[in-house]
Image (cartoon, rainbow, N blue to C red; front, side, top):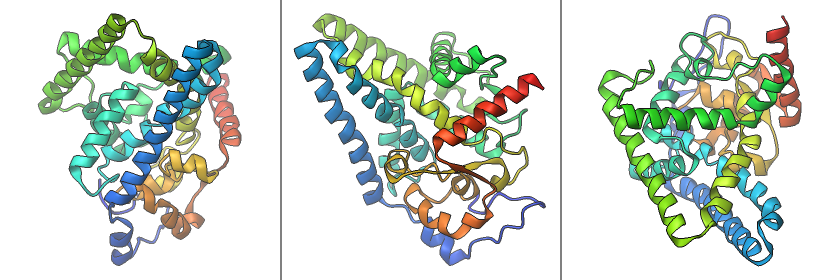
Length: 314
């Protein structure tokens, strides 16, 4: 992705000075390590508490902890996203290590996602070419809307696609070039093999550990993640400018921390070479240019729900 801002004739964004762009684009192993260790640290801590409570009092008593765990596990998507851009760390090896691990945990093959996301940036909001719009759920009733916002259909869809790639050895989606298809098939087969191995190990040890600290929280976490993801572009314009086709949502520091600063989403799409830790500084520079500005995820979710309803009601 080019370092230049994505723009069009309707948006006269002054480009960043080369020195400023270089400064903001500097990647940091320290910043990436701190963010990764804090994110995974919370997951490990909550996992230990879930296991302690569930084995002492029963799984039902651990459900509130599982819900909290779900938020942090599902939001490992942000680690996958940032490492897909290779901006989480200066080290390519660290980007790949954290990316592969996080992607495996959330059931999203990493190499597949990198290619998917590349086309999303190239064709943002283009209904014919943006993968997010091509595979996205298109609800046509309040019931379908509620299911879409649960995120469970999206998880089932990507797991089914991975299974199909692994079994058939055939990849036909347009965002995967022919010379990369063998990688996607191999990746899907490795994921499937590892998941089956973990299942077999859990059955052999007769332990529900992975179920309570990983699988159930991951499913619960989709209820938090999906409204966040819908906030990024839903209801925005279909033009080429990131300042028109993307939304930045202003939210508290804790949410921004575990979302790896991706609520600054206009900034990320306009300058995708700039790593997550520099986005607050970039926001201070371009804030006045942002068209779609969300004031918290409750307010934005009301807006996106209303937008979906308008689509089927005409």
